[in-house]
Each structure stands twice: as C-alpha cells, then as structure tokens.
Length: 213
Image (cartoon, rainbow, N blue to C red; front, side, top):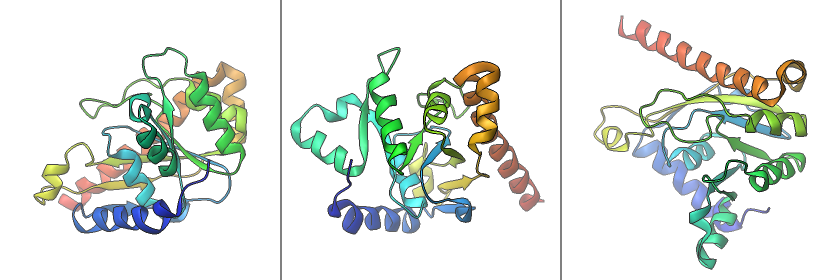
C-alpha cells in the first residue's frame, strides 16, 4: 500500500504544523524510533490518535480505521492514500485487517496497533486483545510502545489548559516476545506490550509530580 505525494508533501506537514501550533504537541524519546519493519503499540483515547502519532514520528506509518470510513469510493481512496486500511469492529475476528497489518510490516513498514482494540472512554486502559501479539509473532518485528495524552480533550488543549503529548518507550525486541508467545500465545505477549505502555504512563506521571514540586 503506497501513500500518495498528496499525503507526504501537503497533508503530513499540515498536520505537523497543526499539532505544534494549535495543540502544542510535545514528543518525547523520538530518538528511540528505529528503522525497518516496526509495530507501534500504545493506548487509544481518541479518533485523533493516528494522525497525531503520524505527526510525531519521522517516517510514514499505516494504521487501521473503522470500515465505515471506506464506504464511498472517494473516502476509500482517500483513506488508503493516508495509509489506512479497514477493520470491522463488529466482527469478533478481523483476519483481513490482521493479515493486512502483517503484510505491511513484512514489507518493511511501520504500522500502528492499539492493543486494547478500541478507544477507552475514560482514559483508563482496557484489557489487551491478542491481535498485536499475533502480528508481532507472525512478522518477527520489534514493537515500539507509546503513551498518548490530551487527544481526548482537544478543546482544553486549544484553551491552553493542557497539550497533546506522545511519549515513546524502549523498543521491545522480537526475542522477548517470542519467549512470551511460547509461554502463553499471542495474548501473553499482547499483555506484556500493554504493560510496557502502562510503564510509560507511570513514568510520565512521576515526572509531572516532580515538576509540580
């Protein structure tokens, strides 16, 4: 799935400017971002998440989007050009979306996966679903965990009460995940990945408390 020049030359820079100027987005540990095949895994709090993660990283990314956004020919064309591919959230097993994610990662792409499988309505993390563990096992790719803040309340950010934040953690190597997969399958490794996201959340909270003091 190739992204268009429209996205890389016009839309991506526009989102980066929007993020920096209006939402004062802060990105931490961007240096942790590796090259090659990669799974980006983090919490999911808003429909704003994918484009602003894309603005935070130094390369093109792909992501799942709800199937209703692909209903018309124009929307389908536009979403694919953005790097999105459809997922049917009403289906218990989204083999098509999982296989597409595996295909992209195997081609050397970076793909955003939300281990919780859906947005959290109150900011509290939900239980991990096996999908991200399945993709990690099938591709043998590294996983880069991240933690998002602020995207669920853009109005507050525009009023300077908060800001958008993306914090990347340390790369999780495939060797680590394969050990977990042998112990408990894809769900075990998915839970481990989400635990790493929770660790980033805890670390950012500690930093905030220190800054307040």
